Image (cartoon, rainbow, N blue to C red; front, top):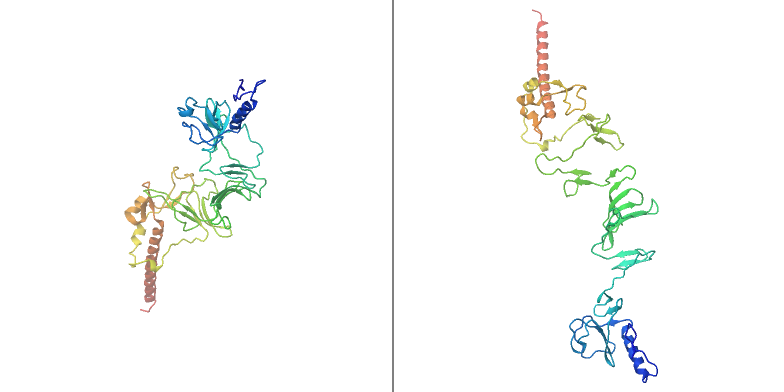
Amino acid sequence: MANTPRLNLPLIESDQALKHVTHNEALATLDGLIQTSVEMQGALTPPGSPALGATYEIGTGASGDWLGRDGELAMWTDGGWRYVTPFEGWLMWDKALAALFVYRSGAWTGYSPQFAEFQNIALFGVNATADVTNKLSVSSDAALFGHDSSGTGDMRIKINKSATANTASHLFQVGFSGRAELGLTGDDDFHIKVSPDNFTTSFQALRIDKDNGDLIAENRLSVGHSGAPASILHVVGQPGSGATAVTIDGDGGSGDKPLRIRNAAGVDKCIIRGDGDVENVNNNYGSLSDVSLKQDIRKARSQWHDVARLRLCNYRLRSAVDDDPDGAPHLGLIAQETEKISQGLVFQNEDGLLGIKYSIVHLKALGALQEAMLRIEKLEQAVADLSKSASKPQ
């Protein structure tokens, strides 16, 4: 009896008696192979009471009725077990694993469809359900966008909006409730925003102006520590010897004003220039001096002799610390000379250089001036007494 070349189905021969037997045999085999579905793969022992149509993929080392049938498909029919050898490219559904397999290179392997490209797909979900709002939906612990090994080696994720008033951003959520957003939100500047309640209320932490790169912090800013800022700008230096909390560099231009304080109208009130000069519009410098802050208060000793010994000098700074060493001379004291007169007037910085505490010098000068005023008053009184005595008749 002849059989078909691939499925090995029996063919009805001419003038064959009992043609229905051959025909039913072919139909039974087809019934097991079309839309192939197996109870399990790698089965080694035939089940005791298989259901009609039950199909198994026989593993290596099978026994019983399956002895010598390794790798074949066994189908249980009313005529007993029928066996078929799979061909390259057959598809099979594994009920136990709920997965589709393909027969390749003599073995069943999980089926992973490979597509040349996707174009104009309305919705796409990866382990999630996409919808009309989220046309691409991914549910995963992580997502990777890698560079093309045959390309430039770069990798950019582009977010494009239709107009300036629209939004192009990354929105970060907790339980699908928004907490932070960064991107172009309502204009073309770059914004970083946060919210406690899905942006019913929100706070803009930073904005970067697209036209000039200016960084604008609209709320308080804390630098150097993790606590809440105690002021608009709260800077804490790192611990350690010589640690610097803030460094401000000027550009060296004629209008160099690296640090300035203005009033609400934008008028400069206090300026620290790049050369170290300080300009105060009100000419008013002070420090807290409330009596409630002080104890052990007593009259200061005489400052007369200290002030008299101070040598006030004109000098020019060396080029290492002054951009214009040939400019106008400065007026001040020499720290090493002053230290010999009063150590309290001198301090040493982290570089070992000596400096003058001019605020204390001014107070010493005030004390000396007060003593001078008393001496002048006494002299004036003595002169007055002498004049009065000389004017009396002898």
